[in-house]
Amino acid sequence: MERLGVASLASLPAGIAVPDYLDADPRIGVVHFGVGNFHRAHQAMYLDRLLHAGLALDWAICGIGLLERDRRMRDALVGQDGLYTLTLRHPDGTDEIGVIGSIRRFLHAPDEPAAVLEQLVDPGVRIVSLTITEGGYVEDEAAGRRAAADPLVLAETGGGLREPRTAFGWIVAGLRERRRRGVAPFTVLCCDNIQGNGEVARRSVEAVARLVDGELADWIAAEVAFPSTMVDRITPVTTPADVERVHERLGVDDAWPVASEPFTQWVIEDRFPAGRPPYEAAGATLVADVHAYEAIKLRLLNAGHQAVAYIGRLAGYRLVDEAIVDPRIAAWVRRYMEREGVPTLTVPDGFDLPAYIDQLFERFGNANVADTLARLGADASNRIPKFVVPTLRDRIAAGAAAETGAQLLASWWAFNRRAAAGEFELEDEAAAQLTAAASGAPIDFLTGLPTLDGLSGSAGFVAAYLEAADRLVRGGADAFLAD
Image (cartoon, rainbow, N blue to C red; front, side, top):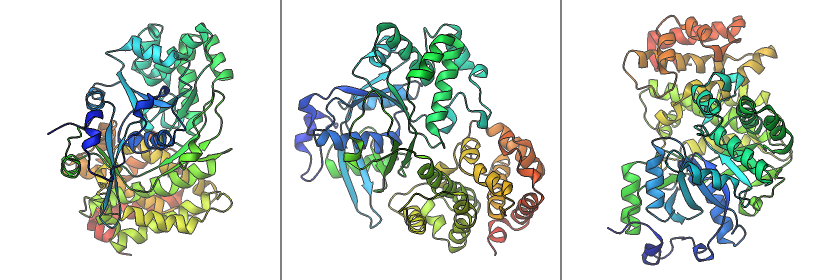
């Protein structure tokens, strides 16, 4: 079977959207670290829309891979002329497939370091963006991560960044060389699910720079922009069924297709001294302050994912849509959102929050997406502190009840407890710490994890947490959801 590529585009079935801009030879304007499914379904898709419209011919993407597993992405994209398929899975069971071509180059940094540096220094590159997951930031005090204690950072900075290892090492190396050559700095655009993600990215970049050259760090602080963003699109892991579906529908092979829900949202702080694509023409929202939008998304959608992930697995479900149609789980998740999440939010003018929450449940219930609870619960040691804990701390500080949030943490404890017993596979960089903490008494989990610090100071919160943990031990998910 023919593989997807430029030569195969003419043979695709009628009605399949293809990149009709390739003959214009789009130039690289964005370098992106962390080319995974989400980036390809989200930011790369927005630029594809602009390229179709002839509005971004100098804003194509060069993807950069840092890890061993990124070689597979490089091989998939390079072997297909940078093309891949994006399937939108509609709730009615229909699929909409198109070919995306906005990633015009991909470099694997360990194999091509000189090419990566030259790409970062290219004056045409005016944005360097990131989707490296919540746990990828090396200076994040809330998560207990410091650049000066990170082995990879110490290895790269100890060598003067001659051989960068992290995204931030590469960004600093690129900015240093641009400064040396008299090239204006690029904008660093974080697209990860972290509140105030621009500030988090800034701290990581500046911390790495300061370990190498204090004057360079000061220059970065004064000259480089780090706008914040809010990103949203449910994008599952690619499965063999996805590969087969593309094969059957298009008659070509795609080594790494991506599928997502139809819904997408991108809110961007409009602060780009070096220029930017007209993202608003592709459906993004450009604002002066992202904070209110990102808080809504993180504290409702992302926290809602955490709420359903653990009790759903404990109740015996595998898929998100299976769990959320259980009326007991749906009622409990909605209670968390409306009673505890919503009161901590500032809602932008004209934003219909009740309609947004209703839409979340429709999205969670989209069986055609086939999103897994395991994906939602992966890397929870980084996600819970960012999506759930801030809400709980705000509620406790206000003297308000956080009973449902306490129950959510109890369900996470119970899931880790059963993972420690071998009943579930735990995909988390802190798996050993989590299972050790969960193997003891429930209170040990609450007081033993630094990222939950302060929650145990509320007697009411602790009482609700212990009562929920007791119900889970005695009667499992049914007892937990009984009321």
